[in-house]
Image (cartoon, chains in turn brown, blue):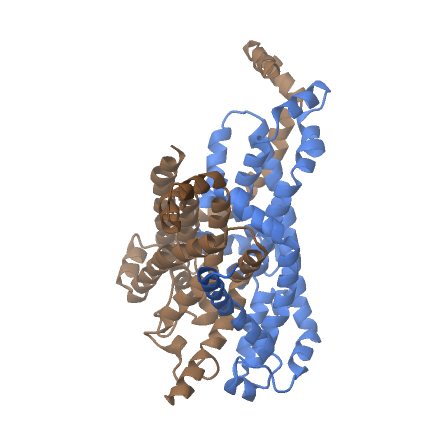
Length: 312
Length: 273
């Protein structure tokens, strides 16, 4: 403490001597050499593309030549609202967010409540439930597209059992989306489970013991002690669930590629298909802008209203 | 001590586990079956263990090239993220300077949106830099987007280090730079390992960025290779299953080795973050 005071005391001294001190003890070097590389990479590959995207979204441009010249104003955005596939992909993305919040997180929490206590069997289950999260999206997608291939997996067992005709859920307009959602829950619930397990383990045992002695039933303990104390973990979980769902892409491609007849696109797979593949830089950028606005509004208001509250 | 409740719990947990284990086992076993058998019995044990498909894949130099490319890209991403991220976070954590708050918030912007939102201009940037079809075309954007996250974690960790240590080192004439190399980094191995693990897994599993930046089959990562293989043998699921299984092996080995850090990252850091 006292040293910290002597640190700040010379602050009253003249500017040059402060600078000289910062040069001598290496603070200046730290700022001049440690900050710029990271900041430059971030600016070049994150910030600039973001700004450029906003700029390009007002043009019709193939990406070649000196730069965009064909200014179309807000026409790209108007085209988006008129494109039913875009509205569908926007809607699908919201469905993924909703399923993440209403199924994935509660399932993760339920599993965490079942296996958070330290024991050999629980460690085993924890490991198993966490495997899908580590698995690559591409591997997951390929495995499940095999299982739901009407000629091979689960569906073929059912249909031959009942003597029905073969069905192909991933090529079916009604069933493709539910299958995607199932795989989506399967893939990510373990992530939320891990967050909740850690939070549950940090609740002091005395608290739960005291409640039990006072005659609390296991359900009451869960409802009135454990779940309220999970609030900070829920705040984190929800944030990752929403941001993650908004950028879903890798899982969609091996399963449906956005089909059948473009019914299962997400915002990102739409952007890839209708912007990148077709080399429509302006149009694609306008999708990116929509994605950015949705994420930014969410992240900003979430940090401001939910996370702040959690701190109090 | 038998209890209905406890056995019910275990049975339920075993049921959920089977939903995870059965698809994975079916994948591994499927690689040993003939395609005809796979159609009739997708989940059972193979009647005859046919090693042909695994053999062909493991004997194919292209397969190993895919893995090597993924490995190279992941390692480069990890090293750059750790070096640049820890240095930057150290400056934020230890030195008070004009504009530090602004710059830190600027970096946090990277946490707020998915990188796919800027993918169109990002592609043009990479193309104009002439690093399309090279590992750098994937590595540099990955580092750029991973930095915000790692810097946030590093800074929290560095700021928690006991101040007495720093003061003592200062009295002994240790400067800021020296302190970073001699104390901060060695004391940060847990967080370094955790971040390294996460960045590695993310890069290893990445599909979108390689898909956009790599067009030459020689430079494909294994995720691109797997999709390619699936397209090539569309009618023969057994081959694709063998391919996927062959890529699972390194992932499993890595997971078992790094499990501690993955769990630590999710539990320690994430909840506090």
